[in-house]
Image (cartoon, rainbow, N blue to C red):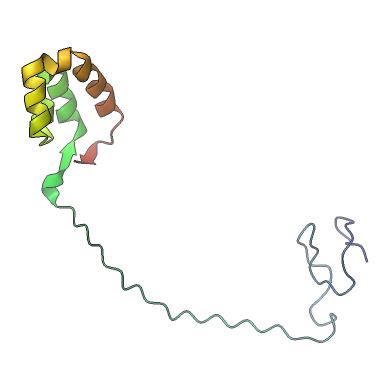
Length: 117
């Protein structure tokens, strides 16, 4: 037997063409078999979100970016992000000799406006 829509060869008892996915016969004329669909969804979501993000964890991208531009050599943007160790490293090395400030500028540009530290 061939599909009347795409011309692909299908089994004579087929109701749906395996090539194009279209219905080639009615369900009633396909041998009298009944199709029973029993969709009962008894699932309940019991998952709890264990990681609670507090309001203080979010930082503003623009504040960090302006701190990076004007005070980046002193590590002000790292202190704003509460990364105190890196802030001290930037303070001692003048922003890791300028390269750290340069890379942080572009990294901050790519972050969303409010980001979580």
